[in-house]
Amino acid sequence: MAMTIGILTSGGDAPGMNAAIRAATRAAIARGFKVIGIRRGYQGLIEGDMYELNARDVSDILHRGGTMLCTARSEAFRTDEGLAKAKRNCENAGIDVLIVIGGDGTYRGALDLSRLGVKCIGIPGTIDNDIVCTEYTIGYDTAQNTALEMLDKLKDTEMSHNRCSVVEVMGRRAGHIGVNVAAATGAIDCLTVEVPYDLDEICDKIVVQKNAGKTHFELIVCEGVVSKDFTSEDIAEYITKKTGVTARATVLGHVQRGGSPTCYDRVMALKLGYYAVELAANGYKNRIVAVKNNKLVDYDIDEALNMQKGYDEKLHSVLRVLSI
Image 1 (cartoon, one colour):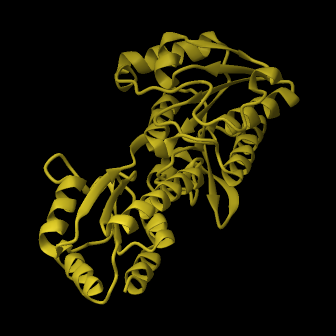
Image 2 (image 1 turned 90 degrees about the vertical axis):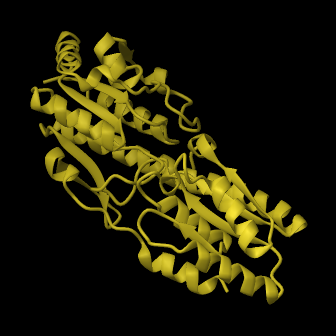
């Protein structure tokens, strides 16, 4: 029996979301399904901001960053009234399965809807790669490469001025972007929420290397480490005072979310979007699509949200050993 698939993107945008939208839309249409695109995530679902998607609507979006469906945070969706309205709008639109693309918050929203009887399937899309049930999330590879490109540019000016660059990258609850770009640029260290650090030890290391002839340094800081009372600028100022090396802070910010997705992100998004429609077509509901051992798998939403995700402490250790 033909069904109707709803698709939305929620939370922070990530390069590759458009590729997942395209894959899910065309995979559904190829099966004779109707596809409803929902603008602005759960907020749009509450407001009934949706329209039918056809194969041409998702043409020429593979290379585009962001999300053609747009995204938004929704305080209303956190309320019983908002959830009830979202459910009613799914029913009114005849949506049989709702595919949601986003991060942990998006999945928790899908869990709340599933408890009200809305059939949901989640696709992981967040640059932080912090969804616990999957090894990889859409947008992560692009964000790493964007940060790496910015760091390489900063290295040119820090070498010219004999400086230390304190570079803040995204990663509020996870240091995956930080430790990988730190390793790839030869940074002296990376401050993450997962691994303890001692700023005085880092400063001592800078002094030793400075006395041995090194003229420039990079320190990567994940945004989860800083706060309004302890900023990247504060870290840079501390390093300057302790080492005599002029340190400057740079916050890369939302530039890491933008840009054309890499080949890897595009291909992974295609696979994940297609797999989500296969699950829907085969009668599965309330599942999370994930990557495990480089293969596509799926989990029950409850199970997925209660898993634990590891951090590459070995890479962090290697980074520290090699930064001599």
